[in-house]
Length: 621
Image (tube, rainbow, N blue to C red):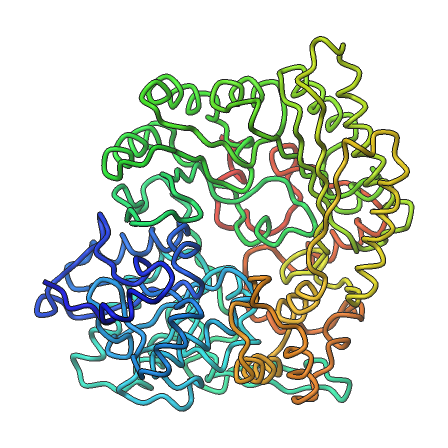
């Protein structure tokens, strides 16, 4: 019988105690005497969010297949337990064993979103691990970061011993074997880091230094350890079918954000939207074999008891075997009470036919992501979607019985004009008009068109990484222009408009393209009480602004200027396959409003063909 880290008294007075007790179905337990390496896998957000993340499930399964490794999970304690743990001096613990995280060999943190950076410090602090890598001793775990935010690790570099750049199925085994060998031979922490940095994809920040020009831009970024490479190469799994996949994922006790079986049908995206970081990071597009996915579906439903299965990818409609897979899922599982969820679909005749079979049309809404209201703006961002596509898709949906549509847009995109902003409302109204073209006796009540806009944030490794942002007042002003335009539309009673938090977007922009200087702001904000910054009820912009003032860091330097063509970026030492030359060419094409064909239509020479796989060789077979 496990002894829980939290007493019954504490569990009774905090929200959702099941977040902290572990013991879920399919959770892995091992005997300490049988293993050599303990790995705590952390998602720095609340349990319900972290348990919904497929990447951690994949690594958890992969690590625990090794007899010599025990991988356990840890999440950020919610604010109620955070307070208790500090008052009672309870160290942060892993769910499976309930042992303190500081007793582990590794603490691996997946970094999915910039606004979780203060939660990373919360995890380290509660675990009693020094915040700065340089202050850690032989008794402390090796702190390793991964995930999309690791592609610009610099704002949080001093908090990590190392980063894993790329997909986890590639060199983790080599890293763990190196750790075991170093430990066996009596090697020190620094000995291990020196060996680890020689493994492809491993970046050890303390082995690098940076110098700056007088204007604050980077002069040079260079290794200061003889073993450290000058370039870190992204790790890629080319054969995604025959790599590890969790067929018995953990089943939580409580409702989580994604409470279902998830089938990852492919990695990467062929589309090339110029604002989209994931579309560049995860190139080339690689598909999983459809027969393998069918077997996964059977096994995962059997091993979990879940009542829903979802297809996952950046653009599921582009999966070449989609029709066969969806038909199989409907034929085999729909009559067994299994709901089938199909996100990331383009709205076309096939998709609507499928969704009409798996959704309650009267209750569900369809989602389009035009991203921009005008065709000019959609060409600038390379969306590859015309107004005719949008109206036609909406029309087919309305004729199929739907009457609710969600439209997603961005404000503040490069070259955006007031006419482009107002076009958001005009497009939403055109969608509503298409609904009212249907004879009244054939409609499903009134239509409801909900348009939402987020604010554009330039991300590393995208063609828009050179672009300036706006300040938060300018974003609100743009949202007001759009809102006013909605009030002038014919079908305004059928239209709704809302927008994202501009203050959060400004901070996300700083963290996305920041350098090592940003760490001081993050630490200062954390010391002032900032955690769970992605949660609106916890976010405190005033504290963040004071943190910038206290550290002398200028938001405008990171957000408000267009980067020069030859500027050295904090992330330039990372090679993701897609070349900076290609990204700059796409930036230039964006400024001319030129569209680049998707990867299946024509190769654009982005650089990832060097891996000789996936979509890059499909047309050549």
